[in-house]
Length: 155
Length: 155
DNA sequence: CTCGCTGCAAAATGTTTGCACATTC
DNA sequence: GAATGTGCAAACATTTTGCAGCGAG
Image (cartoon, rainbow over all chains, first blue to last red; front, top):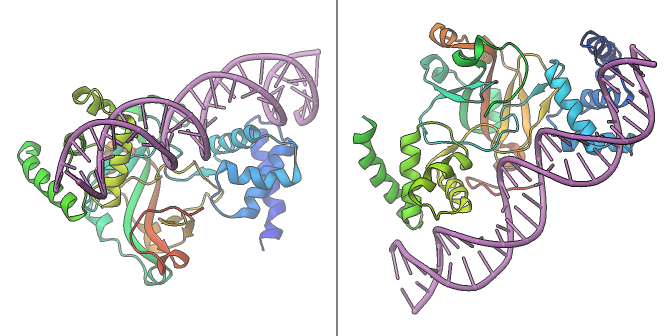
């Protein structure tokens, strides 16, 4: 089933690149194909290891940059954590987080509706769940008005 | 209000340390006090900068190790992302994540109840929300049986 | 007095940047 | 042919480890 869809995905990929004025290079295509096949949540390093079996000369930087580029144009997503340094939270009570994509600030959210969300039985059967949290992402009021969609940093 | 509670928190802190057979050193106490005051989600670096104003000789490692120790005994929490390398996700559809604290594998969860969770109006007013996700944490079936609560790694 | 904790230094890991050459459009 | 993408190498940032001496219990 994955195989069948690949062609469509590849077409969509090429089109998206063209729309964003990105060149469709063999490296990019291969990386995208590998992402399709992996269906996991690999790090740049993980993707690199796989791509290397087909493009032995590819550099890690190309893989890493390509992934960041893909994320920038919305072709793929970056998993929560976003590669930031580890951060700590004194608040052990049940609460939730809003993460600003621009200034990277995390705001605690307290919300009964979120707290009350139940973990379905089938998930509980597959995993030992010790923590449940709703994570929202977007832009805080400081950042929301000025900017729209890019990934530039700010200390 | 934070001020008043500090004493209690400090007592609880000392007791927790004793229970876990950790020594109550000035450094640890200071770091804990700073966490109480910060009420944010600082990185080790961020905590270090503040502690240094009072303990100019403290080393970054002590701060970092202390924070990790605190997290290990459940005194504080590590925010989603956990300091892992950045990871990517091809799946742009609405889905949710389970993160295994042991093997660090992320599993996609598809769950209607989670999808349907509405973001309350007051949150929408404060933030521009572009993404919503439920993140569960715990141990997957491979890791759940062998281990219970520590933080040791496994490649 | 003992063992855990701290500070220092170095290593390991992960990420970013600059530049010359190759390649897509 | 112009401009973007790639590979390489070095810089940078973050996290981890080993060890000698210090200090809490």
